[in-house]
Image 1: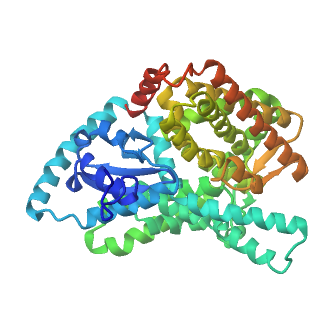
Image 2 (image 1 turned 180 degrees about the vertical axis):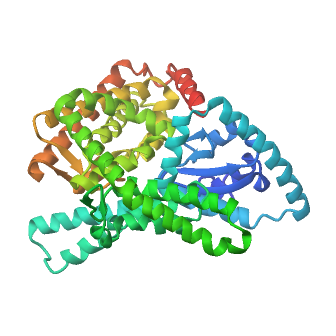
Length: 491
C-alpha cells in the first residue's frame, strides 16, 4: 500500500524525529538536545524509559551509545536535519503544563538517582576527564574544519602561484580562528566546569595577547601563544575554581564587582607567572614525543595507533585527542598523528567493501553500505561501524587489522624521515589530501598517504574476505559478537 501524499516518508528527518521522540520517553523526559558530526546527543531525565530496541530498529538509526548523554548515531548531514526537526517537535509539544512539570520533576529525581548509580558503577576518573576534554573541543570542530580546508586551498594556490591577490585574504581568514582559539577553549572550559564562560575566555585571552612579550617569568620573556590551548585550558579551569570560591566567600553586595575582578586577576597572574611556562614545556614535550615515537618506532607505533582508533571512535573517546592535534599544529604547522589514525577509516572501507561483494544477495545490507561508503571514504567511519561492521562482529576486528596495516605503512616511512602530517583536524580519508604537509615535498607526502590508504583498503578487504565470517548471503555468524561489543559499549 502506498503512503498518502500528505504522509511523511519514513526516512525523512521529520519522520525520524517524530518516531524517535516517544521512544526516548516523550518530551517531558528530554532535558537537552545537541549534536556533533554524526550523533544526536540527548539529555534524559530517566534513561530507563528509552525503548532502545525500537530506537535501533528505526531506518535512519545506525547505532546507539548510552553514556552521560543518550547518543543516537545518524551519520553526517542527516544528524543536523533530524536534530532541527527534533527540537521543533519539542518546542511545539502540546502537553498540559502542570502535568508536564509534575512528570518532569519526578523523572528528574529518578533520573538523578540512576545517573549517580551508573557513574559510581562504571565511570573511571580517566574516562570522565577525557569526556570533559572532548566536550570542550567538540564544539570547535566546525571552525577547525572550515579554516583548515581554507588553509589547504590557500596553500595549493600559493604553491601554484595562482591568484596572488587573493591568497593573503584567504590566509587571514583561515588563520584568524587559530590565532584566537585559546579564547574559545577558555570559554568552553568555563562552561563545562560550571563557571562563567566569558570569564573563562577573558582569562584565556591572556595567553594570546601580544603584550605578554613584555612580561618576564623564570628569567625568560614570555611569547604570545606560549602554552597554546593547554595553557588556555588550565587558565580557564583555574579561573572557574577562583570564581566559585569567590561566590562562596564574597559578600552578596560586593559579589557582582569583586568576583569577576578577582577571577581575572588571580587566574591571570597565575597564567602569566606559571601556567604559560608550564604549558609551554608540556606542549614542547608533546611535539618531541610524537616526533620521536614515529621516527624511532614508526612502524610499530603506526600499527598500534591505526589498529586501536576504531574502538576509540566507537566509544566516542577519539575527540579527546583534539588538544594533542591542535598543539602539534600550533608548534609544527601540522599534526603527524592524524594521517596515521586516518588509516582506521581505510580499514573500515576495505572491510565494508568485502562485505558488499560477498553478501551480494543481502539487499538491505548492501543498501546500507552504498549509503555509508561515501562518508567512509571521507573519513567519517561511524555509519559503517554502527551500520555494518559492528553488528556483524568479525568485520569490525578485520577493519581494525586494515587500519593497523595502513598505520604501519605511514609509520615505516616516518622512520625513514618522511613524515606525513595534516595542517588541520576534522577531515580524513580522501578529504585529507588538500591538507597534507610533511618533511618532504608535497608529491612525496601525498604518495605516502595514498599508499597508506591503499594498504588499509587492501588489508581490510582481504582480512574480512578470509576471516570475516561471510560464508554466504544468509550467514549470521558474528552477529552475536557484534551485539556483545555494542552492549559492552552501551554499558
